[in-house]
Image (tube, rainbow, N blue to C red; front, side):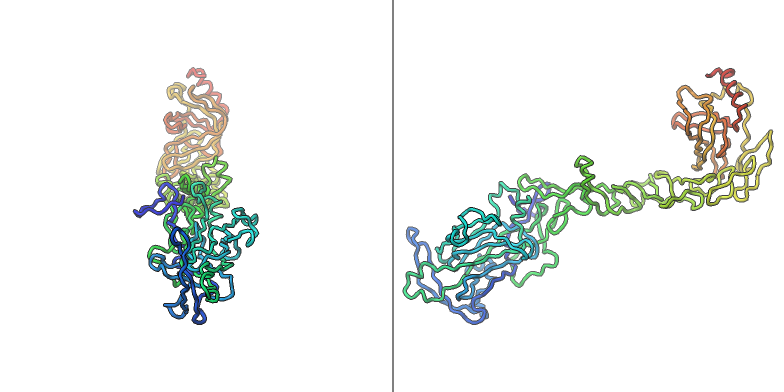
Length: 594
């Protein structure tokens, strides 16, 4: 059944289907008719009153006559009289022009789509012997008959009473076409019955009840039976239609997602004034995260599931669900393919991600940005721009590349630093292809390439900034020292690249040989990362590991972090086959390891 708005003012839409209150759609709107009594000049008209007398037998009064004149309010019977309050103005009515024309049409044009539930006509004249009720759903371009009314359905419309016409499904009834009573006879139409068996928000009901225009076509007048009982009455001017009330019951069309409506966009009320609170407006104030004049779609950021009308029988609201956009989008759209792929759990794809984010859920930083882990993922400034040197860093079509969670830049060969803005030790001359290797045994000036330390075969001061640190080349010395050091690993590696991390360096190397390792370790051939720990702001590291060179590296593992450490306690020497033989002899004979 339709859910009415609660008198307490609280929304009835909380966790359930809801609907605005039902009212008279004709109230406050213009009713159109083909004619009005006395519109051209004053007209005389007569009428009879026939009521139920003793024991239910009809009782006739004498004919009464009066004049109608549209120019005089006291004698006017305009169309607006049909939609005024029947309680405040019970004796006002519309009356057609008198004459030979039998057909008359009444039309209500609405500014948007509404739900039409039932119609009540209260006639002042005898009810028509035949009439039609029609509706349009496209603002009057096409019309469909909802009900045929006739004293004789077969004779008038070629229809058997109660059986639908194949073309439009409308049925004919003779229930409301008798001449008696001659005044205040009713014609009633119910749009959908019984309510409890049909979901009023379902597609079938919506197709049946939705209207933009209603039209009542009065096809055939009939005389009051009293007229035949009074001598001379046949000549009286009684050929007209007159209606007290034209009540079109319905509500704003909201698909079960609103309990309140406001005037539709651009709607200009007509001169007819509805009583306070009686006007049925056409634009829904949507709930359940829906949007649109009729709550016919999900709100921009709530398309994670397909839109559904509420269920009016079970009361299920079918709320629209918010997309997961991490507060970086203002809207999303529903993807049926994604919805099916996720087992009908999620189908939302975020639109136009903001704050330098991208991805289905705006979960990733755009190329050229990295995630600042100190900020919440939903913060507008959670994606920071990569601060990479335009010459020293690797560029792509999308801009600079840096680590998505660290901001570390991808450097060109021989370039180091978090921003790839300087040559690493042993390299000089930053240019578009990286830095060039120094033509020295030690370090060289990063700008000119001039060697800083003279070459000395017996005692080399390698790759240092003299004012910062000095790195002496290690010597094997006593085998006892090598054994006491208890190195966790002894590797032959080729250094591929080095990256400045500020407090330490990360050196990417390729393992050539595994000479020895701790039994708990499982180092295999392939790439490995070494972690020199004494990296300084000038780029000085001891021991020295130059990209492109091969070394024997013996060091310890940080068992907490899993890092293979290289520090001043490590043994690092440029690789020579003779050194390898000597080390294997020390490891196996002197240290007793295999």
